[in-house]
Image: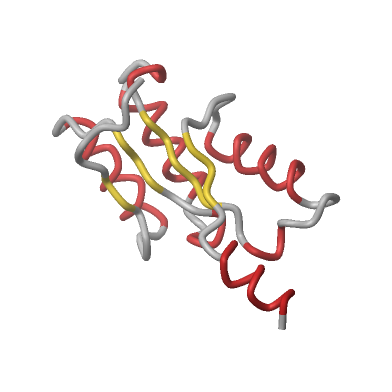
Length: 108
């Protein structure tokens, strides 16, 4: 699957606003949905994806692992927790938005 040219971001969307926004975006034809652990809306995003009835394989789902979860002990459990919250077994892309900053701090 190619990354869709247009994506729908969920930054600062909470609760029912997050749910309704993702549901509306999917109904409007968006197939790239972007969320993050730190946004606190993975449950709502996942529920909207499920309720939309859009086949999961048609959705390019992106999430971001928070910097606090990058250690060997925390990374996989945090990804599994996000998968659970999103109600899916599949991401298309997992991002660490602070990787460069973390590396710079380690070199300092």
